[in-house]
Image (cartoon, rainbow, N blue to C red; front, side):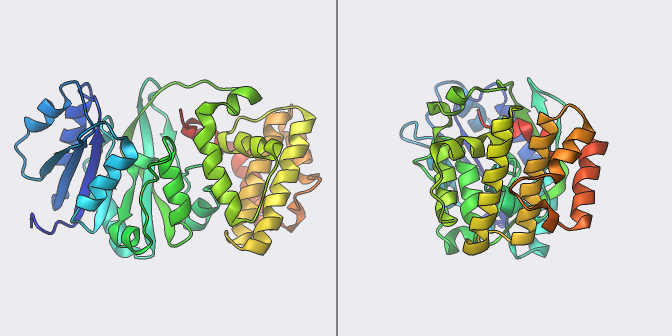
Length: 353
């Protein structure tokens, strides 16, 4: 391995993670692919995190200490600026990376030069263990869904450094949450973003509340979600009302409601998005319709008492033009949803804390 020019740079911010840190570091150092540097940024830990890191003698580890606690975005950006590899591999300090992760993601990126960011499927550990998150795979679908949600599980991502520099992309330090989602939204306008349909990371997940009220969903806790939404709407030349913002966030977080008013508002908003994109051309229009139809199906399914009622409501869409959706797309969408758990149900866990 060339210590000066490694193929990849694994970057891991750390802040008071002594409980899980050794398991995470071991999972990185035990990768079958070895030509990487392991940049660890300690963000002012007050526990034994630094002591644990220093106990390792592996020359690939490069430890840097922030002068003060500066946040995840600052630490990740510092790691990117220090990195020498062609690829930036995202590591969270409490997850487990499967041994073949680096090898498989680097091989994928090498053979797909049009892809700038690539994640993978993950399996959850911790408080909510055993869930399999089948993130969307195709780049055009991933791009369209970034309007609503992160789509990629951040600690499973690998990023092409060339594109980060070419398009001046870094994590937004002004965003205290969902910085990864913001990066995907901006990046997907310049290059493809994808997922490998294979579990490469065990992701530590916690229990979070569901069935939020309008007041809870509009609270300070979700402020940064709305900030990213506003940036996305600006690209579409949209100036939504406060109620439309709330409807959009309910769709993105899968915090759906059964009442008729919400169902109509959701359908009307989805049609408004489709119309705006037809002019702005931010997302590939045929795929965008398929994605919007998927959200409409989730609304219908949640608000209906039976699958038959849901199908009827889906096709009687008052605003969004479902008729223009191809027969194949309709069959795939409804067939997949009726036979097994929908993709959106599996992705419900991706709501940020």
